[in-house]
Image 1 (tube, rainbow, N blue to C red):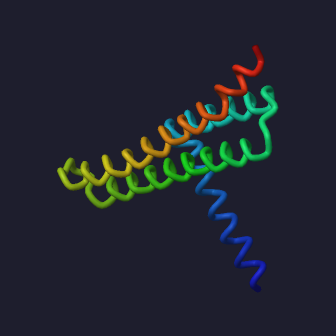
Image 2 (image 1 turned 120 degrees about the vertical axis):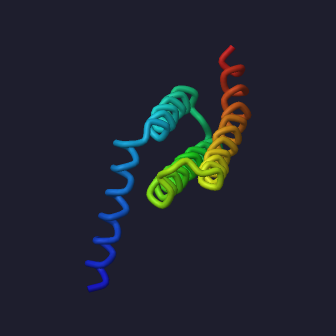
Length: 120
């Protein structure tokens, strides 16, 4: 019985990922960016430690975007009319994604710039 509950929970979680990939343009942009970073990482031959930081950074950005999308959906459901509090909540969630993306970008600079310079 425990395995069945786990597989049901997993299928719901997977469906949530599929939905965000299908419906959220910003998530699609983050996925494409992540794919390009992964390709660049393979080309540059990143170290194990560098990969750890890259995977964590990508994961945090994708998680932040999923949470942001969820908050936006909840707010649209609860308060479909434009309301200052709903806007503030959505803006705060979007700000969280921005912070995660900027941090990931900075991590990328620290990792990729020395590897690119080493090529020359």
